[in-house]
Image (cartoon, rainbow, N blue to C red; front, side, top):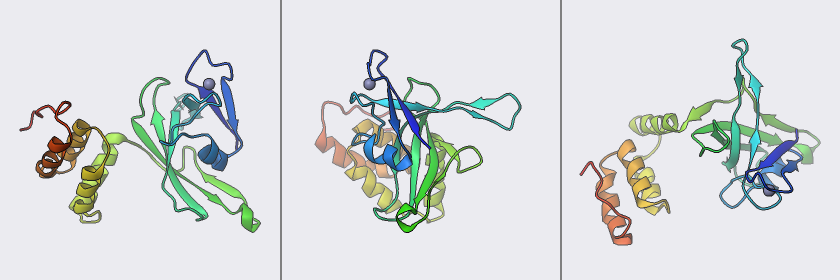
Length: 191
Ligand SMILES: [Zn+2]
């Protein structure tokens, strides 16, 4: 299946860039942060439309990029699409998906995709899932804490995530982050 990337800049002369298949889309049409790019170098998006079971209703997501989750060389490659509900809004949902590439072994390139396939989760639902996984001890909260502390996200964003997942981490984060920044740090309301 080929993928059409439309340029986010309406004045772009290239306007449209095609990726031959999901592997091509992932390997050759994303920037270092996983956003889709037009051949002019600016960000782009893939516009999709799916009829739903509910009569007359359609789902029209704007796919802005892909976060890969697989290990290099594996035939099974899970990934998530960063999904926006509108053309010009920042992604607010994640669409879990995968491809399986057996072309080198005489097989085909199979994409697990489309309604009826894996779920689309709102970003808040992903956080709720993480919260549950921590509670059930399936994900180790120490590892989450380490991720947040080592993250390059802006301080306020890290505090926001930490507050939602586990308030106790905030104290640790504050120690680390106040050392890092002084100008952008504002007292959070939950102090
Ligand atoms: Zn362009």
